[in-house]
Each structure stands twice: as C-alpha cells, then as structure tokens.
Amino acid sequence: MKYFIRRFLLAGFLGMGITNAEGQELFVYTEPASNMPAKSVGIRMSNWLMQDNTSNSINYHLIPEVMIGVTKNLMLHVEGFSSNRDKGLSVEGAALYAKYRFFSKDKVNRHLRMAAFARIAINNSTIHEEEIETNGHNSGYELGLIATQLLHKQAISATVSYEQAYGNAAGNEFPTFQANRAINYALSTGRLLLPKTYTDYGQTNLNVMVEMLGQYLPGNGKSFMDLAASVQFIFNSQTRVDVGYKRELYTNMFRTAPNGVLVRVEHLLFNVVK
Image 1: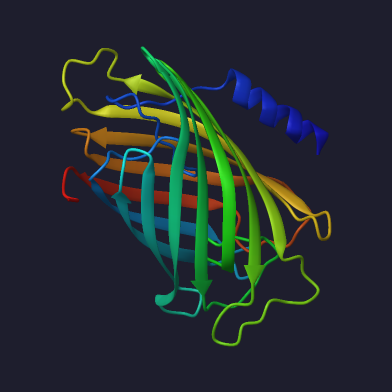
Image 2: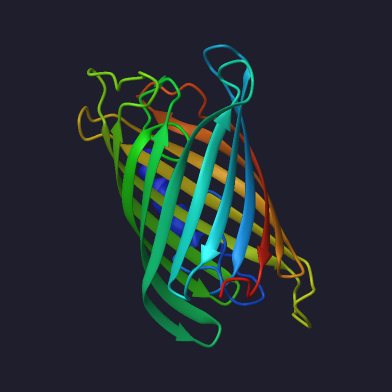
C-alpha cells in the first residue's frame, strides 16, 4: 500500500497537464475546478465497457448527461443511468450534480481555482459490490472539494469527497454487513500535445492525461486505488471525444468490474440559456 501511495504522489508532482484554447482544463475521470461557459448547454454520452470478474462478461453502462452553465461559477448536470447487468439495457436511475467555483486566482497562462460539488442519486439496481459509487451504482449523495492548478499547457487537479450510500429502489436494500460511507480521493494530471501554437479556435486539440483514483471505507478500513490513462480530442472548441482505460492497482474490497474502457462524446452549445 505504501508503494502505491508513493507512486500516486510522484505522478501528481511530476505528471502532465491539460488545457484547451480558452485555458480551461478538462479531465476524463474527474471534474476540474473550472466550469463550462455561462449560459451554455452541454450534451454528454459516457459509455463504460468494464470486464466483469465474476462472469467473464462485459458490463456496459450508458450515462447520458445534460449540463448547464448557469453562471460562470455555477454549473448543473442531470444524469441518467442504464446498464446491461440484467441481460438487456435497462434504465437504473438518475442523479443531479452541482458544482460551484468559489475561488479563482488568474494570471496570464496560469490560474488556481477551487470548487465545491454535490451529487444526489437514486438507483434501482442490485447492490453487488463493496465499492460505493453514486455515479451509476448506489442511491445516496456525495459532497466534495476540487483544487486545480493550471500552468500554461500543464495542469494538476486534486479532489476529495465524502460519499454516503443508502438502499437502492425496487427492494434492493443496502447490506447490513457492508460499510455505507466512503472517502474518495483523486489526483489528475495531463498535457496539451497539439497544437503546438494556437492560431484560431478551430484547431483540433490533442490532450493526454493520467489520473489516480482511490476510495477508503471508514466503516471497515477497506480501500482501493486505480490508475486511468486517457487521450482526448477537442474539435472546433466545441466537440470533445475522450477514450480512457482504467486499471485496478490495489484493493482489499470486493469489486465486480474495476477494469475497462470509457468512451465519451460531448458537444457544447454556447449562449442558449437566457
């Protein structure tokens, strides 16, 4: 465990960052402290293909989202959850996510930003693992903080959150022998590779990133740590395509499908909210 913690910290301080043409960092497995532009609407489709360790099959999770930039400091997400765990793609739940940026220190080609976020979710799927995840698996809520440092083409972002799970709908009660509270932590870092020099907003961006994702259950002391690597394309400063792979580095808790691929497509519409 100490080995992975050292690698986690080393990746954060020596890692790479990511920025787009507007100097706003964008990560794949976590959210940055920055928000989408005010009065804009985003449509996002996240496709998770995860290897199920218990059945040697592929778990497919589809998470569509509508994102709204209410102001420059406040954004909202409405999320839906569906998966094929019941032998056919079925709707399993929904969530509301909000993020508020409360601190900004901006300079030329750099900034430090901090934000608070919250998610409340309801889910009707079976509770089949010890990992707690309100973004697609558990009913409950999550509260957290994000700090992001951008340095020209490099950014590093740290996230910490508290998560509380409850019994799922449709009679899927939370197991009494499992811990229902979690502390989540993440360190995300990446780098803008292309273009080398900006001439206009129509240029295609190529970003690469590495993210370390962990969870600790205070109720029983169990934990895990994952490593995720991603590439990201941004077209015309408006359409984004992410491809990532996540792999478990360490765990002592039961998880059914920790390893797999994420493919996400997102499109942003500017100045559509009055």
